[in-house]
Amino acid sequence: MNEENYIIQQLLEKYANGKISKAEYDQLLSYLNEYDTLDDVELFMDKDWKSLDDYPLSNSKSADIFQGIVEDPRYSQSIPRARNKISSIKLWKWGAAAIVLIIGGLQLYNQNESSLKPARELAHKQEIVAGGNKATITLANGEQIVLSENQNGIVIDDEQLTYNDGTVLGLPWGSSATLTQTITTPKGGTYQITLSDGTKVWLNAATSLTYTAHMGASKTRLVILDGEAYFEVAKDIKKPFFVESKNQTVEVLGTHFNVNSYSEESISRTTLLEGSVKINNTLLKPDQQAVLQGNKIHIQNVDAERMIAWKHGKFIFKSESLESIMLKLSRWYDVEVVYIGDFTDKVFTGSISRYDDISKILDKISFTKAAKFKIEGRRIIVMP
Image 1 (cartoon, one colour):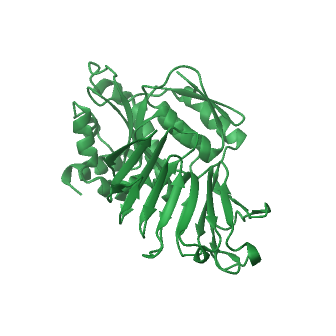
Image 2 (cartoon, helix red, strand yellow):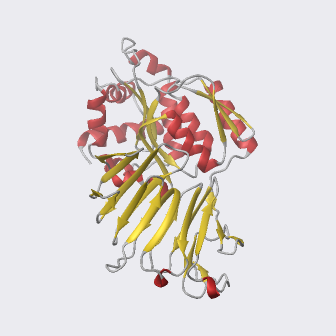
Image 3 (tube, helix red, strand yellow):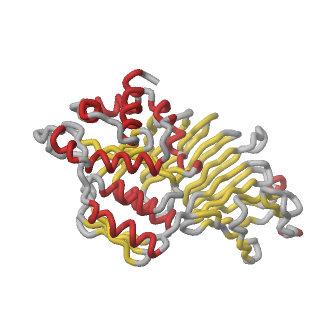
């Protein structure tokens, strides 16, 4: 950890314990108000980023610290008011706390507590909880099996289905071994499946995967995906592995990659973590992402681990539109999102657990004053 980050953490700890002096408080604000351009801020945030994860305060405690900083009366006397022109609003994770950044300077906003209450209180009242282990398998004969929510994955072999802990589901394949089956997760659902060749697949919410129950009986290994899934493909030089989704085919021999390809979205994204894959005959290297829109494909460099944060139970957004964020929230929390007004120019960056109350995420976005939220049943209304 570099000296500057260490000083910031020490100042935050003193603030949390109520032992920060006026001079130290002004010093903390000077760090938060130091950079004049977004490029400088991003450079600072990326530098020694992982070291900030060692910050010893809990997420809830850090959130309280941040709220205390922006509501502290000394804040209004210390931050220059001249830097007040907004052209883009972003939400960053500083340690575990949220920091609001604005092009042209870094400004902390004082969010009125009463405007945050509706999202928090209504979310608890309506019990909008995060997703969990939910999936259904549809057999070749049309029979459906609802998988246990107390398990997180299943294993397919030549004879039967078993859960990851070894519990036998007790389903003989019989003559249908070479026929296709489909595992589907609903909104608010996730599940992991180990195919008969040893390939492991993690399914995100609102996703379906069609596969052959006994891949040894076919010449190629083929699955059909609608949604998002992370693959760890078992190596087999004689049998390439294919993932078909909307407008694209991913070809691999053995590698780790993520495919985001929902039929209702216009863009498909394939991200490679290790090995190599071909997307419509275009080669992809590790830490690259293929973005497919229509018949046009674009290759870009990315932080691949950030792209699969969902698999590790986190939301990580970087310069992501509000509409894209709300679409992900709607799938994971199984809610409907309604917009009142135009939010196409609002982008955010931030990190939060996928298992936090949805109100925490809405509150962090509300800190920017770019949007307000109202919850009615399982509907979230986004307002200016």
